Image 1 (cartoon, rainbow, N blue to C red):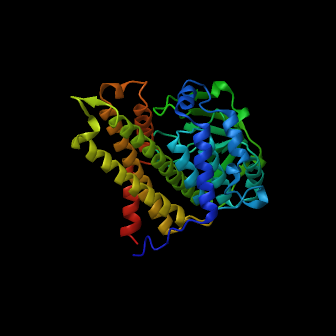
Image 2 (cartoon, rainbow, N blue to C red):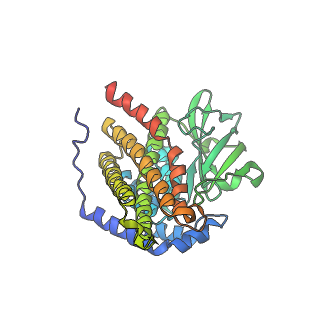
Image 3 (cartoon, rainbow, N blue to C red):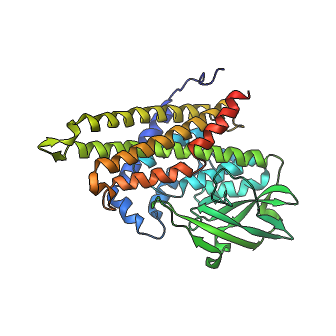
Length: 372
């Protein structure tokens, strides 16, 4: 077994991207700005989105023929780690995953929406038809020129210019590209998401669709499966960044709060868990960047799949541990809305289920490792 044989190397271009991502996210997403957006209907700032478009991030992994940079999707790990650290929320992850699904479909019908995304259109994929993130069954269907079905927890559906809807047509998987404006408000139901920086809707679909909106092909099932796994990796990268800020917030409090005349950070019962969080973050980051190194714009290799499962499983547990300790170490104040610790715990609880929980990923990991 040679998993992990791929050497993690960081190029000068990747270092530049890392610095640019960290600097931009720090500039655009102060904690006060994050809190202000919690109360907004959109959940993000349109000017911030345009800044990301201007940086070329929407088209980073889109082929040059469709207006993108043609880089590997693994390059997004650095960007989403920085976004997680500053809790910067935009429809970028949803848009990146939509672009990946289109690109991996390898169909000419995907070229036009890919070009639109590279130019700055927001997009999302309606993955779910139940509350189980690992349930890939489809009830949505194309029948007599109409798209019929219900999709649950569609991330950034309210903001999306394009919504990619996996459905069946005569028993075969198809991807229907729907303009967001074609879905009326009566067909939308906003979800209350425990991570208040997120926005999602349920969609009741009953739309007329043309043949040009339907992407067909034998490789769509694999493309959809790979896109979900890439989603798990990007969530892992984002949550690893968030865990770093969560730990920083906790340590800052431990260094200022006094009890019985001593800084509470001097007590071993608090110092040791903080070190455990730091070690867990390092492990998560190593697995995330290992997965990024295994990524390519071709079909995902076995090693890439193994790495994605490991990264998501570990990162989910890391941010949950960090968020839980942050709330506990802040005492009674940690349970209040005003305390920043609860922002990270809410993020952690959302991460547990997004694109599969740790148990689900370990089951798939076991199949890959033991059935090989």
